[in-house]
Length: 173
Image 1: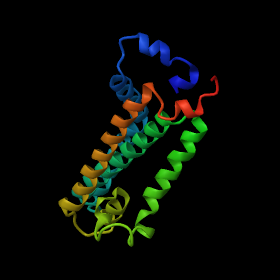
Image 2: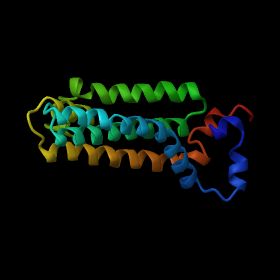
Image 3: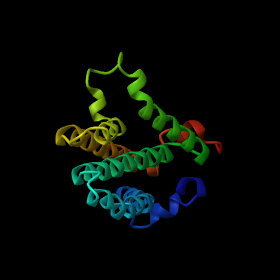
């Protein structure tokens, strides 16, 4: 965004480093979705008062929802840092998100057996449709998704100041 507005040189002059700027952009983008996830907590616990949903399922659902939100925000931040325009970043981000969502349908021949336990939405589906909560599968999905989010945010901070394709796509020279 800053590169497109021509403000990247001003940020280089300021005492703001790329990781701090990336973290600020990530936290700014994550504030509203996390508030929306937190706002559903009282409504979910009403169901546990009536005996419909166990508190363990509620906690697993909240953690998995927050984790997939974090992952999609990190994907958006990464695609925004490597692309020249917002339109390209949006299209690439949606394509990556669709590949992630539909990976269980086509990924069996390409990925090892049991890779679905590391996908957040598949684990969320199994948590919501099971009688009890087994801690290990959904924690695997949470940790793997948070690690991938961290790697994407770190990669975005590397590419934020200098786009990887800026020499190829530079129209001024």
